[in-house]
Length: 562
Image (cartoon, rainbow, N blue to C red):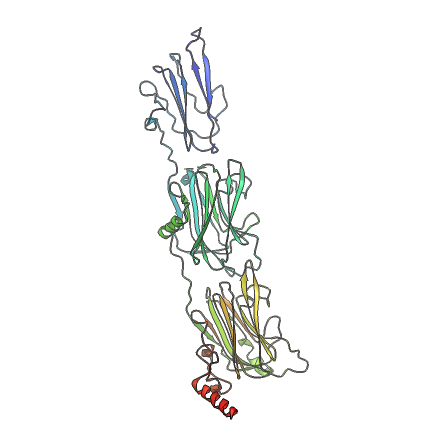
């Protein structure tokens, strides 16, 4: 709190008697921000004009009826004098003026142009930080930046970054935490979570079911003031996270790109002015919080005038104008054909010679969002000591050996099929934030007959299909999968299930665009029986009466009536 002191001499009985006058001026919450102090005396008007130029306002103080002694000596003390404590802080651009023109009336319009060095400190200088390289930032990599000169006398700032939550990147997240850190923009040199004002200047987190923004309020004071914005689903979806502050308002916004929807919140808080230091951290595991799991793209820090935007449409316009275009996920079609003509697992010698053909790894199929497989199989008669349990046929999973279980983790059963002698189980899962939920369907089959199986997925649905000699059956399951990083294929030998007992052949696996087949029979190269009996199957693989079969049915019906 600055204190001004003056000596008054008017209307005193003894002209040698002096009277001291003083006034106090309240500072703002930003006590460390640069302030400009001006004091001047004018004998002609018998006034002392003082001005405290704070960051956001000017506070003039006028002493009237003042007459100073005619000085014989003028001493200037800067920062400390013999009668008071030393000033703690920084001083610059101090000037002493004498004589005509030294006095400026701070109540007159335009006084700013006449005060010495009044505009030396430029407030809210514009600055934009971004990475020079156009790249995806994948956690656990973090970005850390410290700002000094760029944040001198700044009280308007914003952070914006594209995020993409990916459960399988860089590896499958098996334990979702309550809180995952997105970014933190702080103004304190001592790096803490929320121990003092400024630790959370602009912060964003992902919690279970919400994006959470956190800031602080110097007027209360409160080290952490939070607000939440709910989400429906986030797996694989690009979302833009934006946080900004200006003039006692915090604005947070989430833009869901695929949904073409934006949600926002505002918080009424007061921040201290930045005084030459700010620190930004993106994607850090810190203070007991896990880092965001997935990707960041094109983080940007906006400082100074024009940084603050509190309208979602204008934020979108800013993104289109300033941000780079998001990377495109590859979806090109690729097929895998099992290099085994026929495998008979009841023949131990046959199984032993092909044991290296039972497990495959596909590390070049990242981000593929459509995939399927199809094959023929025939159950053999179980040996007396064998139980009629579900046995592993084919499992396509996104989890590697270090993570994989039967149905313990998300992605264990991306697409998996199991068989008893009289049933086939198609098993998958759906995301149920923050975890997953198993989804399956069981078909009844004829014992020991050849059965064709198809299982395919595209975003939002999985179709399981079987073809028996008497016709097809299928089931569509409404599911959503995580974005895969890689795939693993396991054939006949499965985790947690007895090995398949019988014959299997013709396995094909499709990845990418077009993998989710309208007619699963397209996968069949060779039939184990005469396919003519399926001439009544339409282009979608479903049974439909043809003209010829209708005539036959009609003749039989007429003959029966006779």
